[in-house]
Image 1 (cartoon, helix red, strand yellow):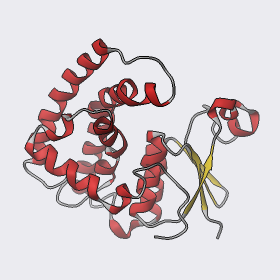
Image 2 (tube, helix red, strand yellow):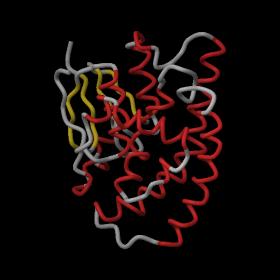
Image 3 (cartoon, one colour):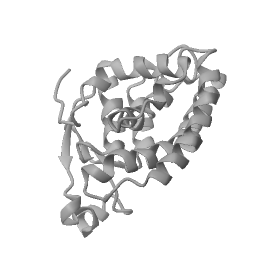
Image 4 (tube, one colour):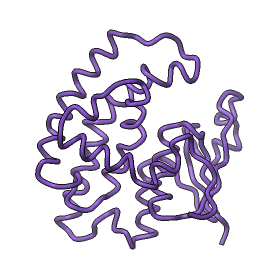
Length: 216
């Protein structure tokens, strides 16, 4: 069987989200860097695989999947031993609840903050906008108050075992710290959860960027 190919960029948050899931499940993969600066993602050959012209996508022995969280769900379903997606009815509902919270309550503000605090500097996008940072920090602070309540009842967001819902948070949560912000460690239960995630081997492996990983 051909090794899974991950098309993306080493420091892109969505690429890291997929790579972390692969590493958590110990799935070998090859990173194929997409030259965004050269417009490779808008060329016909690329658009034939990813019609939105975005990163990442995967090629799993000829099977193409794009959209980050869909990719992660596919990988977790293909390798179910660690139960990153619970299958029991009620456990699955709680998982989907937590995954939805990441997508609708955490990511919108966290991703904007990461753009302002880190990505603008990394990719030459201009100066940080202090007003935008202040606005998004206030929103995320309120969201994390709810997270602190949830994490005061269970070890992880969907119960006492780690799931994709937790891993989905990793790239943006870590980059907030890289950007010099301590918002992920201000609340005790969030801090415990965040520090545990940050120390996982699947997360530490790519702290300097995603790279092809043939073995673990």
